[in-house]
Each structure stands twice: as structure tokens, then as C-alpha cells.
Amino acid sequence: MKWKKEIWFVWLFILAGQLYAQEIQLLHSGNKVSLRGLSVVNDQVFWASGSKGMVARSTDGGKTIQWMQVPSYGQRDFRDIHAFDSNTAIIMGIAEPAVMLKTSDAGRTWTKVFEDTTKGMFLDALDFQGNNGVVIGDPINDSVYMAISTDGGQHWQKTIPKNNCAVMKNGEAFFASSGSNIQWYGKSAAPKFAYISGGTQSRLFINNQCYALPMLRDKNSTGANALAIIDKLGVIVGGDFAADTISTGNLLCFSTDKPDQFIQPITPPRGYKSSITMLNKKQWLVCGTSGVDITEDGGRNWRFISKTGFHVAKKAAKGKTVYLAGGDGRIAKLSW
Image (cartoon, rainbow, N blue to C red; front, side):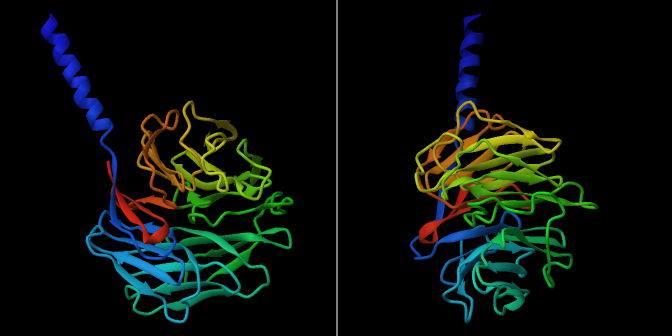
């Protein structure tokens, strides 16, 4: 039966080639812009935002990318963006005054839908599920800063989370590294959101409770940076952005049913990670200044696929394509 063994080994070789064929396809680089906001509507439409008031948009899968600087906001840093479709998006300007602007005409004009001039303001991330929106910011007077929208971001109402964890600990805040530290989850009829903190303390806030995270901590540059939830499975990534080659304490998995029970990987991703995107329950991608890693076994083992640094990665809301964005105006696509 030697011939059957030979066929079996050939099949294994072909299968391995398919599994290890992922690569990063660079679509654009060279702009002196740091991109940390990214929103992917479908396989063809994505928006990105970043420093110097810049926004990027494509409707053809990145073959052509339209770059625009928001008028009167050329010195602002738009750390996050949410796109509803090819024409409609909201961008988040982080600091004093904190603002959010919305366009309904593909970026030709922008309308201010939120502003807060409070001293010390620093917005970190926003997220939407349908018309439900939430934005989170660094603590003001030691309390979590948050605002809610129920009409697609047209209007916002500041709120204090209804739990015993609203008061932040000394040295604890949120990272604006990829617009990924807060996420809606659950059924659309009754959506909820979870969020994570970092710094000298690092915690998961979920189901009106908070849980200390067994990640790198105790420095202003350490802790959780990004959160992703699919069904009841959650993943948190981070590390130390000031020492981005350290691979310990940079990833945790949990269940939304048992959020106090964390599972660490057998083989962790390489170095600090600022973003995670989940294609399905088994295949995930993480990125950071340390490069890009993937898993195909639900986070137990990770494989390094690119040394090129990216701040953020997002999968299409309606589709399968994964896009990445980072420093120097870098925009890329994952060939999976």
C-alpha cells in the first residue's frame, strides 16, 4: 500500500501549503501620517483615519485610495473611525477639545456631532452596533468617561457606567492605539458593550463587573490594548509598547459567560500587539509595531507572518477581507 502513503504525504504537503500561504499585500505607503483608525464596510469599501487631520477611503478594494485632509482640522489626530457605508462615516478627534465629525457625502463635507472642551479630555475609541454608538475616554476626575448615541452618532449623551468599577485606579487609563478597546456584543435587540483598561492596572469591564487581567502591567506603557468578541468568545491583546519585543503577557482568551477565567496561549504571538481581528472562531490575526501573527487553532498557537508593523487590523463587516493600517500611511490587505 506504499502508493496510498505517498498520496497521503502529497495531500498533507498541499494542505500545509494552503495553511501557510497567508501574506500581507501592501496597498499604500509613504505618507507621513500615522493611521490608527480603520473601518471596513465590505470587501471593497474601507475608511482609515489618523494624524494631521487625514482620512483615507477606498471603494475598490484598495486599487485606488482617496486621501483627504478634513478642513480646519489639519493638526488633529483622528484615532478612530466608524464607516456605515461608502458615503457615511464618523471620525474621532482625541484631545482638547475632543470632537467627533460625521460625513454623509464621502468626505466632501463634515459636520461636528460631538464636542467636549473639558480640561484633560482624551478620547480613546468608539464602536457601533447598528445605530447604537459608544465612545470611551481617559478618566475625568478618576471616573470612566463615556458617551452614548442611539441615532447613528447624530447626538451623544455623556454617561457614567452603572457598575461598581466606574472609578479608575491610580495609573489606569485606556489606550488609543487602534480604536479597539471597547466593543458591542450580544443580540442586536439588547446589545451590551465590554471594554478594557491598561497602564499600571489592566482590567476587563463586562456585565457590570470588572476583572483584573493577568497581562504585563505596572508601567504606563503596559496592559490591554484591544478587545474582540465573536459570539461568546473574547480575546484581549496588549503587552508593552515601549518594549515591543516582549512576548509574555500579551494575549488572553475568555468566555463572556465566565469572564473571570482567562486562558493564555501555548505559543504566544511575537511581541506587543495593539489590534486583533477574528475571521471566525479559529482563525484570528493580531498586529502591532512588532509585526503580524496569525492563529488557526483558536488562539492556542500563533505564527509570525510579517515583521512590518501595523497599528490596526479589521475584517469586513460584510465580507471576509482583512485590511491593516499603520505608520507612514501604510495600508495593506491580508491574502488568506
